[in-house]
Length: 216
View (cartoon, rainbow, N blue to C red):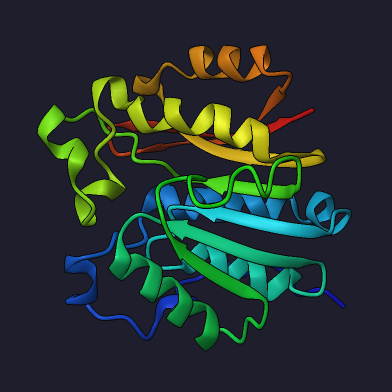
């Protein structure tokens, strides 16, 4: 029997404040994504195959989802930050996840075209904060938040790659903030053949965050 997705902090209880000097610490956006995925558990349990998280950071979401659904999914998590990739693997192993592989890379660059049309669940909490151009070349913790103009530069690179990777019956869960102009992102994915629905929205400090599901 599948477990429920754990939305508590327990999966990263082994990490310390010094770890989060180099890797994004779970925050309101992380917990919003976990809450959205927990609300989608019945849908996720109807699928099986390959689960991918892009930009897992501490590995909290990868571990929570993989532990709950590891009978159904093999997991690949991809992070551009080498420390985050190592931390994600450690978090997954500590949580008892047996079917998790972690790749250090940018988005799907190391996996396409091999996974084209083969990923059943994609999760991405992107770097969505508008930022100056000089922050866009970083591969450390800055890569977890620096989104460039309108916070969209990484998101716009991700969109066509995710559409190529998503399976015919798969779901893509993408976090967007109002400054990212979500309607434009929805239109871009619609042009690539994906429908959308808002799963969950929440105000977090001065941000309005949305988890949007895309599907064929």
